[in-house]
Image 1 (cartoon, one colour):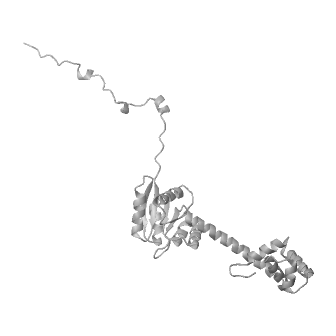
Image 2 (spheres, one colour):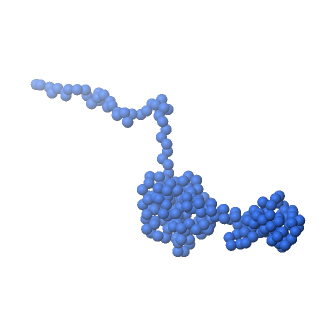
Image 3 (cartoon, helix red, strand yellow):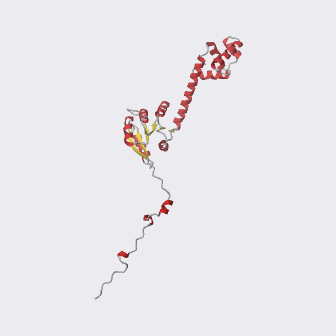
Length: 263
């Protein structure tokens, strides 16, 4: 009787171990020590949108929401909703409109920035009145961007503010420079008018003539006095005002003369 032969090949227990693909093979300690470290995945910038216009919010959400490093965590239609939403969603940046029906963006920014650990605020609006700019910046806003700013610049503003850099649109920056210059001029004018007020009437008249570039002889003729008397008044003006020469008198008179004001 024929005895059945076992199947050819090694027994299952004798099968050689399967080769692991390279990706599944464990790295040796030496290989682990030389493998470059992978940078940790950065957390997306969390943004809260605050605007009473749903179309604006939709546009901002569409613009920012598709970016890998930005995440829209909430929306509000009025400044009165901001505090609760910030507590709930802990955003890094709040894009804040100014004009809203109940609580405007400036008041909401002031309230928000008084809180410990408050998010950064970028004021986003259609207008750039200087008082609004200054109030927003005094309240602690880190940026002020116009709504007609190109989308790429709004995205860049969010990223920069999240990184701790203040942002102002070029138009707003220029307006602030102009405003500061005007205030400095106003300050100089107030100081000059105060100094001139310390003179008596005749001395002020002489100073005004000096400011118009008149010589001593011309001043004497205009004010019906001798040249020696004019020189005496000029000397007294210099001493009282702590000035060194006639040019400084002329500059002071110029600073004291605002638009529509005669020296």
